[in-house]
Structures are given as C-alpha cells and as structure tokens.
Image 1: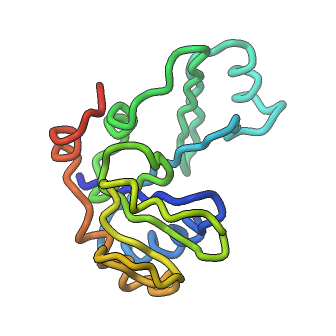
Image 2 (image 1 turned 90 degrees about the horizontal axis):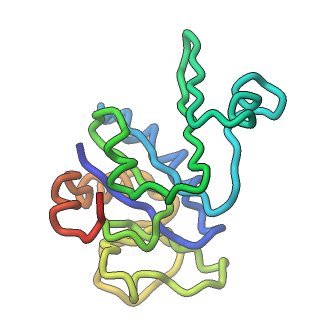
Amino acid sequence: MKVIGFAGWSGAGKTTLLSRLIPRLIADGLRVSVIKHAHHKFDVDVPGKDSWVHRQAGATEVLVTSGNRWALMHELRGAPEPSLRELIGKMANVDLVVVEGFKTEPLRKIEVYRAANGKPALYPADPWIAGLVTDADLATDLPRAHLDDIEAVAAMTTTLAMRADEIFARSTVKV
C-alpha cells in the first residue's frame, strides 16, 4: 500500500481537487481510499437516527451496515486522537491511501496552494512537501501542476506516493 498526503490551508481546494483526482486514479486501475482529518467537531450520522442515539448513549463504537456500505464510528471519549500510523493500520489494503489534512505529519505531501486564499505557502517550512498543485507562479524547484491539470496531478501523485512501511521507518510517527 502506498500513501500520499495533500496539505494546504482551508479554502485552497483540497477536497475539490481530490473529488476530480480520485476518479482519474481509479480509471488507471488503482484502488484508492482517503483519510480526512477534521479540525473541528463533526458528525457522520444524523441526530435522532439509531446510530446517533447509540453513540449519544455512550457506546465506544457503533458500526452501521447495509447491503451497500458499512461505517464504523469510534468515540474517543477523552482518549488521545489516534496517530496517522494507527489510522492507516485500520484501512483496508488498497493501492493508494490519500491523506487529506494532517499538514504537520511527517509524510510525503503535495501542497494545494491557491493564490486567492491570501495565506503563505507551506512548502518553504515543511521538508515533507514534495510537490505543488497551484494556480500561482511560485519560486521553487519542486514538481508543480496547475489546479486544473488533473492528468499532471495524477502523475505527480503516483510518482510521489511512498510505501506505508517506508513512511513509518523514516518518520517519528509513534504507534
């Protein structure tokens, strides 16, 4: 399994880019999964529905399943947030895991940078950023692709992705 991160400030277009990139990677025959980091309280089920009621009642985990999908929700209930390594370990074995967010984690990343966002680029201070997807003309030797060039972004993604075991052997991520 290979892993690549996509990092950037909120509003840079990471989710929009990935919604276009994932189908392109799948068309190449890759099985792709995503780990998305949320910086705020979020919910994946609807208040009042059974799974929500079970979580609110104190269940540590609630697994919802149907003939189409299943989802496992795990409440931390004050426990520390799992490391990226732990989260990757929970994923099914696929060809590529795309990590959205986790911009401070030590894994190879592609920065999504939009000039109109008015925020500074991350790559000058983050040695783990190995490529840029941007609409700006930034002074760097890093590989670059335009936000609208999905073919180039797909090529960059598959080229820069690292095997999961390489990431953890080189990084300080704790189990």
